[in-house]
Length: 148
Image (cartoon, rainbow, N blue to C red):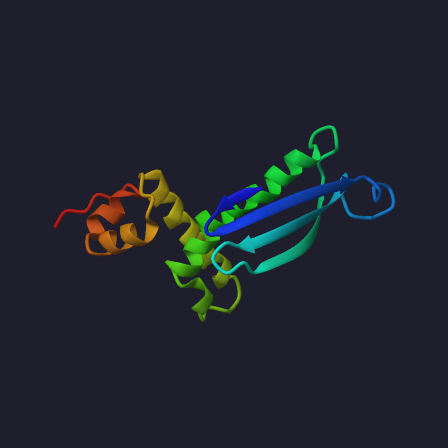
């Protein structure tokens, strides 16, 4: 059970090896079911959901507790990369749709986020605003020295 962000959340995870050898899914070692029960403390509203997944990790390499850790760890990636791309770089409203350009732009955004994190910035939006006003500092992140 976790308490935070105004919610009380209880999770349970069940793993099975039942589909190993039965399914054509490459590398399938386990299937899992994650059940979540969430109650919003302020309103008392409750919701429940069930999600399913597959993993190539055997039951010896990943117990149900470890699989749950990995599933929850996915959200760290979502919050540190995808959310930043969506909100700070407004990626969802991008009108770039042709050829490989969407993938190239995503790679450029990821590179910018990675460089900013490498430089020690934790607030990517604030760093972008600051560096937009000081392009010489932004160029220094990629090794380009610029003199006015």
